[in-house]
Amino acid sequence: MDETAMIFEQIPLGPMNNFSYLIGDAATRQVGVVDPGWDARTLLGICEEKNYKIAAVLLTHGHYDHANALKELLKNTPVPVYLSKHEPAYYQPECDNIHFVEHNEKILIGSLEVQCLHTPGHTPGSQCFLAGNNLLTGDTLFIDGCGRCDLPGGDSEKMFHTLYNLILKLPESTVIYPGHDYGKTPQALLKDQKGSNPYLTCRSREEFIEHRMGITL
Image (cartoon, rainbow, N blue to C red; front, side, top):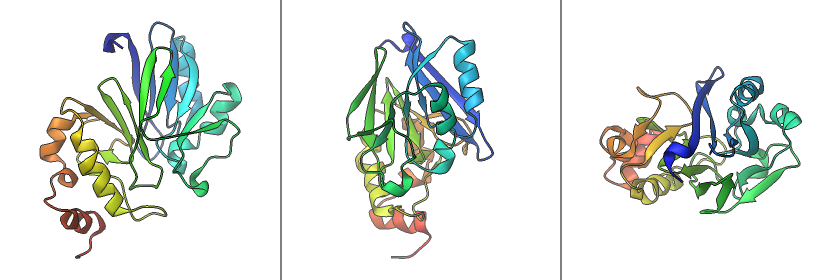
């Protein structure tokens, strides 16, 4: 899809500096809501104001701050909810509409194709969404940071593999859109993150784990 025909909105919400996103097809006005945390009314209000039709919800992972507005959102719009098949039961939201997706599975929102990339490390089923040249990274990768690996299901070795063997192999022109506003900018080119993000410049797996976990191997 021509990026000028894409709906793409980054929306700051909640007390933890979260970003939710609306992504979709400008021709049909269909959108997917990515990580509906904290404020369903705001998300619904934007959609009503701009005549967007919510067609899906996409979850990068199941942590509370990324999905706590899901129930209210679904009351108004009972649409499919896409979550990685690898996310454990204790991170799966309670709803009847969950569709479990595989690595590299593609979701169609209008004519916008969204690719699901399984990126474990923060949680077992963390995933990123690639829409055009935009990578929505949830808590896998932040601007000049990366997600924690010390919560239940976290795994620093898997995070290393995710960052170095998957994300760093994407085109340098990929734009990183994180799940939290923790950096100097709300988004950044992967090319620039390769030089400035300390979690993308480690010389070895051991160095990454030591840096991420604060331990010496």
